[in-house]
Amino acid sequence: MREKTPRKTLLLIQFSGSKKKKLKHGICSCMLYACVIFYLSMSHANDNKQQIKKLQQDILQKEKSVQQQQQQRIILLKQLKQQQQVIDQSTKAWRNTKHSLNILNHDIKLLNSLINKLQQDSIIQHKLLGQQLDTVFRQKLKANRQWIFSNHNHRDGERNKHILVYLISLNKEREKKIRYLQLTSIQLVAKKEEQQQKQHQQNTLLQQQQRVLRTARNTDQKILHDLNTSIKQNKERITKLRTYETQLRNTIACAQIELKAKVTAVEKPTPLVARLYGGLTVGQAIWPVIGRKIHSFGEPQKGDLRYKGLVIAAPQGSRVQAIADGKVIISDWLQGYGLIIAIEHGKGDMSIYGNNQSTLVHVGDQVKAGQVIALVGSTSSKISSLYFEIRRQGKAVNPIPWLRK
Image 1 (cartoon, rainbow, N blue to C red):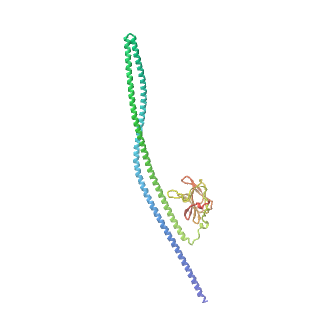
Image 2: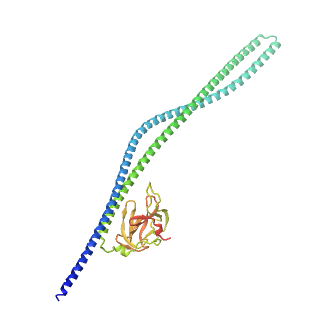
Image 3: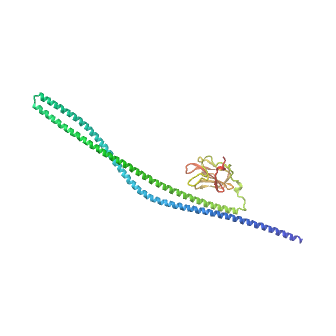
């Protein structure tokens, strides 16, 4: 009995020493693992801080640019006000010119009427003068015959003489009137030519004023439109940069939460979703809706933004179905996505369905492939469609390879 006791004690000591070595080795491994994770997290955090700093610098630069452009816009608006005053004066001058031109056109029309009337009167006077000359000639011939055959009747001779004098005087008046008509006609024609020359000058001036007004208006409107467009684009760019910053901050926060979860889950069992669902399989997921693809993954959207999923046009109210088995983790309204549903399929795989008219499932619901989860709605583009994404480990991927052909 005395010989066995030391052997047992020795075995216990050896067993205890072996257990202590294993425990010490495990503690060292955990500390090393924690140090590696801490180093990686610090490196990732430093990179993210640099990205945030760069984004903030870009935002400041864009804000300064917008402020400068807004100041330029104020100066331009003052110039536009002065230009509008010039345009107003030019418009008044144009109206006066047009009024003068209308008066000239009326005067020319009146002169044409007077000239035509004078020409008609002149023709009539010439005709009457011819008739009077013929009468004088006949009267003289008659008087001579009577003088020859009337034994020189003194009374008849005096009467014929008076008639001839009257006719000659009448002819002189007629000729004088004809000359007056001719002179008046010449003066009217000269006046008409003068008015027509003024009319041509006024027309030329009117066309020049119209061109100046049109050019000034078009130039001012184009400058103002371009400046407003530039300001709008910069504001949109700033909004996008702020969105990028917010998304990046959210990503950092999620990464930190995941990092803490990884450290604390070293000895924890596999999560329920991972045990229930095996993730997505390439080419096996069903299409979320029957429709026409109008935007593809990676297609340019606005500025430097690109689509991170598919946009599928479908009639409003069409049924949206889950592409595979999974658990609903989001069923809510989000800015830019409308009513949205997100389903986790295990192994970090997730499907997202946006722009819905109505959602038919709630957070925590377990869904099967093909189950109707929502109804298609319409967006600001007035086209009813579904926005669809697939994400793996939080990163959007092209959904096409994962969907059935």
